[in-house]
Image (cartoon, rainbow, N blue to C red):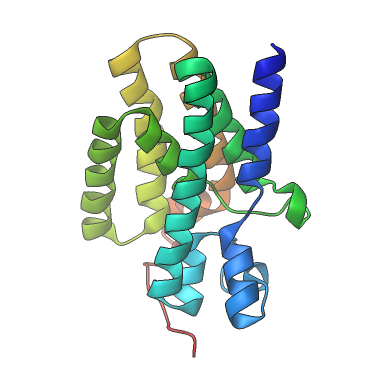
Length: 198
């Protein structure tokens, strides 16, 4: 139990290192949470500060989730991976270093899925790409893939702690996207566009 506690703390602290906030602060001397949608994530960075900055943010968020998840895997196996990944997601969404105002968790979730099972990662990446090609709404693609995560875990691993933690991660992501979901329901969600920041 003590090992799980240390792992969860480590995962949370890794997740709390928010790359969107740090990148925009260091490169543009601004707070990304005061720009665009106000979300400290890759999509908002790409929209406001350019696709290059957005992709860099995405890569950093995925990487930190992979690091946290693999730390869990090498320490306590698949359950440790999921526990550390879930803690990393919580840290990303509510970072202790940035007044508990962070991102929505999609990139971190992708990193956890990549560390867990690359086959599931590739399947959900394909789903994301198809949804984006059709609707060009990142929030909709994100919600679909978030729901697909526990479904995929159930198919591959069955009922158990992996499924439970994947369902909890899905619930966190859906909660973080609650305003987007409301706009999608009312047909008010904007299509993805970005503007390079000079």
